[in-house]
Length: 359
Image (cartoon, rainbow, N blue to C red; front, side):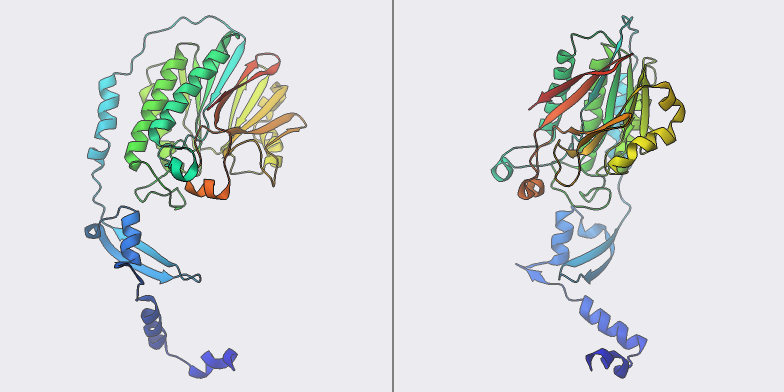
């Protein structure tokens, strides 16, 4: 009988709407705070900024909200310090006469997650924006020190790959996953810009630099904007090139080596070798040693699929991250060895050294 109950009632559309409104309207009160109040407080949304709210209850009993806010963000004020930073710094650099070499130094500080917050009382390891900057600077300098035995001809500096932890004013990733954060979204942007500028300035003293940005899932939009800010910053430096394009897979050739860069959350690992051959047939034909450097996983061991593999003609691997585990990752047991990694490629014989700076 329950199966035919709705048919026998034959509710009108107005009656169905009335029942829906009756079921959706009440909000559970938790210690004097409604679920909506808690929702906007967690995301830093002011009540005066709310234009409209739609809400419903999910099957698991959780309340969900769709909130429209006023477009009252003064971007000129928010980005004033970035604009001042760029204009006041006067990014014009003196020419450097580099010595010729036979090696490419790959510097890849992966998954920095500026803005990620971890409390050591909960996770066993503290992490915030200051620590992120400190580790990246220490890691880059550590890789430079470890590469001293090679005559560096050129540097590949890999950027992006979740350099920032969130991608919007609500404290969430691009897809809307809420994160524990240290500071505001615009502070993360400024910190990331200053960090990358300093890294490039240091690396520039060694050899000409090719900067390649990889799109990523935590900061898909803001990371793209950051790469273009860097491109504008170093526009007067001919020895620095910046690939700020939106392509998910990037390719870089050095001598007899072809390197593919991707965040690591896109195409399946087993498909990457043939994708490289399909998307870059000429570069494939012109090289003998080929590599994919991936990110996203933060570590070298993954239970359900390989973290590294030598395929026919291509080696694929994921890189470590300098960032600590936050509350969620610590609770799930995703606690990995923290490091900044790099590689040295010889012009004729491919990868000849792996450099790792641990924390």
